[in-house]
Length: 98
Image (cartoon, rainbow, N blue to C red; front, top):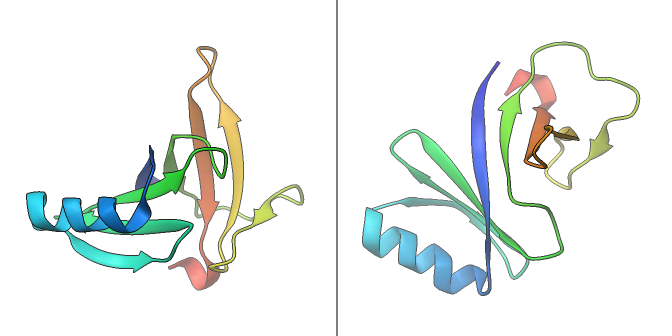
């Protein structure tokens, strides 16, 4: 298990992608009008719109995928857990163990 990404809420995906690129020399992994992903060094940051996903951090899982896991459009599977203080942790499984 390892940290896959951290997701933060933004109001404008493209403006945020541009800001991370210009401010931190990030690399754009993906972006559209609904979400984006940038990488700074070896840290991925998902840029999400409020109400689409909760702010969270994600841990890549290597175990078998539970039957209750949902599908992301990028082919990954996921489950959101909530700790006792309400923080959201995403367990994520990538196709072919990516």
